[in-house]
Length: 390
Image (tube, rainbow, N blue to C red):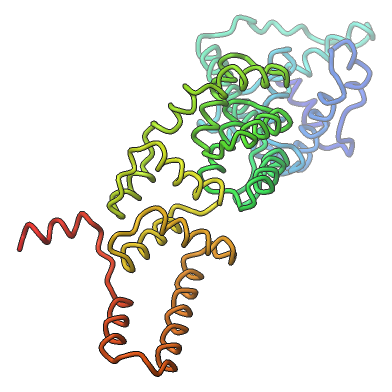
């Protein structure tokens, strides 16, 4: 041990970062170019850190003096060299950077090889007991656990995750197709479902484009309906365009699928019916709502806004009145509630100017018409509560 430590001291005092004898016996020691690079870093750390006699160097010193090495790569290579019996790693204070690296096994092997090739050199045999004590085995098991944890971290780092606010090329490609086909920006619900199709179900963007094209041809724009189709395709292992066409003709085009799609629970439809007082249980009325929502591309908030206007301005209004309001907004490219309020105020101001300019309108009639414009919207459910309390 002492002789080997003298060797380390000699190398520490020298100017060479790596003894040439390692290159000479690299093939016999089964060292590759990366192993030689690691030994270069270790000897360079010995020269720069000037460790105390027979103390070795720590992993933290190597990482500090050679910052080009990553923790994962250094850990992996040190573990490999230790398994080959070329270095020894002693447990430090617990963390990986505190572990102490000893080059004594390397010096032992090199000493034997040099003595073998140069018989005149006198090298005393090292009678160190080769049996590993129980404590050393425990250290080895702990080291393997650390290696597994570092390997897991490295595997996680390799996974490419899109940063917030940015989408992958596949997502953008399909999203642009959906926006082009629907004529509107993709909704949040459709965006969430698209992530599921690409990530959870593992569909390629090309396959998704074919599936969405067949859906849009059949006026299926609801993300929930499309996800149901996607799950069936995944379950039935449909992977070709011919298989897609057969699935759509055999199942999607059937009356059973259409009935299930219209009769399924939809909280948006129920919310619309509760706030307007219109019974939305009938399939025909659901079709009208879905026409506004997916064919015309209005958000649920805009449809609710049209229902609010219907409740304010008419007593016996219905879906026909809302349909005319939304049709008017669609022709004027009104897609936001703020634009709808602005258009309504302009309409009221225009009517007011016409009434002022008209000479044959009675004051009583003017007052009654004006009062109707300031009716407050109250949901039908609240009106029933008020009537019961009176």
